[in-house]
Amino acid sequence: MGMSILPATDALRVKDPLNAEWVTVVLLLVVLLMALIQVGSPRKWRLLGRSMFSMRLGRQVLREEMDLRDRAFLGLLAVGTTLLALFGYQVMTLQGAGTSFPALAGVVVAVVLGYHVLLRMLGTLLRIDNGMQEYIYTGFLLFMLAGLVLLPLVVFIAYRPAWRTWAVAGGGIALGLLLLYRWVRGVWIGLGEGVPVRYIILYFCAAELMPVLLVMDHWHNSSPQ
Image 1 (tube, rainbow, N blue to C red):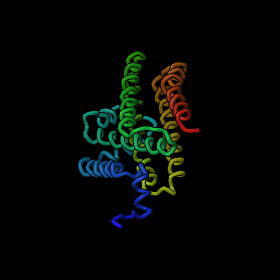
Image 2: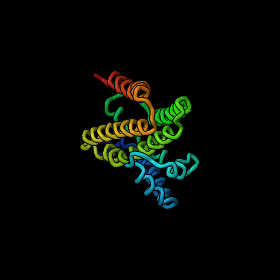
Image 3: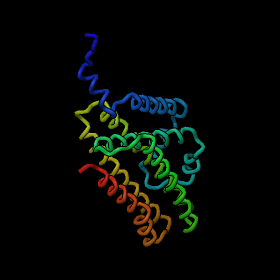
């Protein structure tokens, strides 16, 4: 008859945008970048691991580790950005919300840069440059950690359709816990630097909690009922 019939698994793969070829390429590039960081700067992983779970960081640690010109540091930020954007794309696609991975990646980068600029301005205004620098750095660390935590989950979502429900739920819980941990460390740093409690509450309500609530509301309204 001259017609070829695709196996059911191949037809499913063609129709499933979550395991398209470009997703595989993105994940391979992420793994390759992590391997290059391990080869080029293995000490970076140990330093970052210790810093992630310390409530306060010394000034020497900040001078040695927080360098936006460090290729390993920038590489880990790129890993975090890519995996957070990919997870967001997967979740929104499963919910039927139209989106694109490059657009989400751009949003994630804009949010990170926006918070960096905002916190720098607040640090200068409140004259707590040291404490704000520490909070910025811990935010970067948790951003990187979020990407590493999401890596196996985005792989499951892409290639194990039967596991998608629990992988999405697990990713949401993990991100929520990391966000809560970020806030706890922020309060701890602020109190340690002598920032008045009213300023801490005002900042978290305006710059941390409100954007999260707006994102959740937008996500809920854009999802099909």
